[in-house]
Length: 419
Image 1 (cartoon, rainbow, N blue to C red):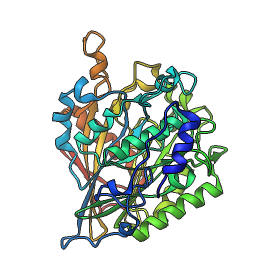
Image 2 (cartoon, helix red, strand yellow; image 1 turned 135 degrees about the vertical axis):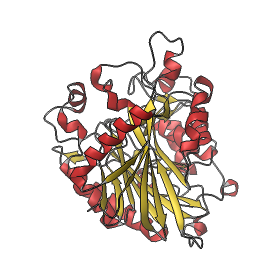
Image 3 (cartoon, rainbow, N blue to C red; image 1 turned 45 degrees about the vertical axis):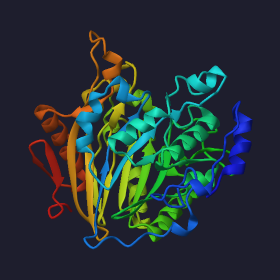
Image 4 (tube, helix red, strand yellow; image 1 turned 90 degrees about the vertical axis):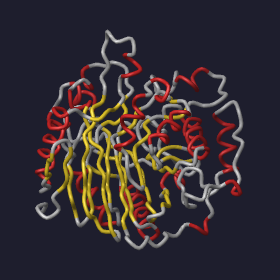
């Protein structure tokens, strides 16, 4: 879906420099035409290829990546320690932030001053760092995607396209933000539909004439907007017709709590630990529409796992990279700094298994001269951390009838025992 002419017009409205545009002749063959961000691929290649003879496809999914830096320079040990854990035909995360605007003269465009301050503005090289870890599919819909407003949306899109990364959830307009992205691998095609709800700044939702986020509006903390829901489910159905496996991504901050989100986190209210009833209902609707994997972030905590109609629903994978300066107590509890990498295996489009490998995220140490460089970076969990994290995940998954088998520093879902 080309965006050249409209993107230039929008960029002139928001930024002090024009976008250079793009050319179909420069497209990368790994991705399909419905790439939701850049629209750079040839439409003739949009259909899913037949899977190979063995029909196997694996997808590794992590917690969210709230990232400020090119960590290859700041924390080079991260790549060596974590990359061996990220194995799959598809390696997925949520890029939580906006790519800083190259060449912008106004301070606000780089720092978020006057926008969403402090902004999660990352250098474009942060995407190179994620790519070096093995990530090839990124959700971009979240409450920080609009931190640099329209220019940040367009800057992120340009940076993604320049690196041949596939992503969904933002766009130059609502049609593009809502569209599925398709990643073609040697083992089949995986589609991504990406959305966000809650803590979305006013005006951040994409419209027919404005760049932004694929937003699901929710009234009274429990009622999804009917038009938004119909649009999202319609895109999942579209993706299911074209891809071998469909991932539906939901970045959510709407909890059925009497307190606002940050108060809920600060006071460690129990509802922070579980998905709301409306979220569970909507996840089931996404599966009914054709999603094979539903994965969520938002609250930086692990939530439970459900197997529903042969699809896996990961209600919250917490953090993976969390480059957040020391904050009020809302983000200081232990489980904010523990997570898992979930690997979902398919054969002939059918769920075969789900595996979990724990990671520990470094909180940093005040006395360490590399405090900020280390803070928020993941590493394999040690034996005690692994046991604690996996037992918590098993406990949180029990209400969904999900049985986890823990074996040392990893766990699997027992599909035979799971209801």
